[in-house]
Each structure stands twice: as C-alpha cells, then as structure tokens.
Length: 96
Image 1 (cartoon, rainbow, N blue to C red):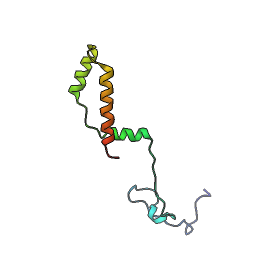
Image 2 (cartoon, rainbow, N blue to C red):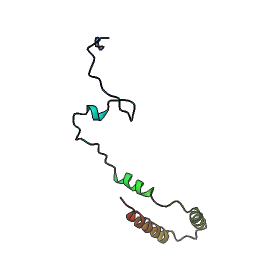
Image 3 (tube, rainbow, N blue to C red):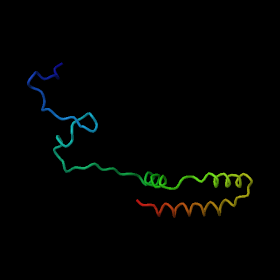
Image 4 (spheres, rainbow, N blue to C red):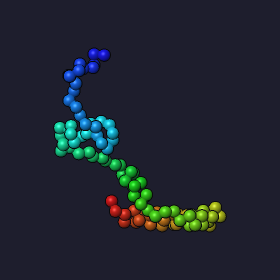
C-alpha cells in the first residue's frame, strides 16, 4: 500500500478521453502535439484492399466455367491467362 499518496498529495488531475471513455485526453496531456500517428501496410494488404473494391462475383459465370472445367471442355491455360490479365487491368484502374 505504499503506492497510495496521502490526501492532498495526489497527482495532477487529468481528463478522460471523451471518445474512448478511458485514458488521458491526448490534447490536454501530450507534450509533443506536433507528432502524428503513422501506419504502413504491406503490398499484400494494399492488394487485398483493392480487391475488395472490385465488383461482386458473377455466380452464373462461375457456375458455367465450373461445368466446363469438370467436363474438360475449358481451354484452361489460355482462358486463365486472359482472366488474370483482365483482373490485373481492373486493379490498375482502381484509385489508390
């Protein structure tokens, strides 16, 4: 119990952060107000973010291609390369 200060000898009062409900309000207590947060994302994370911006799945097309693959009626090398090229072009056109 030696960590408790006597009455009248408490630490300087600090405000609670209104957004989080806990901690110290950074605007009130931060001595270096010119610092800013910074985040760095890997190339994989950036790619995944861009992939999420693509249009939704065309289930009818997926089902048709699956049927062709199962029937071995799908020229996979040529069509896969064409699909990948189109996907890369779509990604390159996205902002960010």
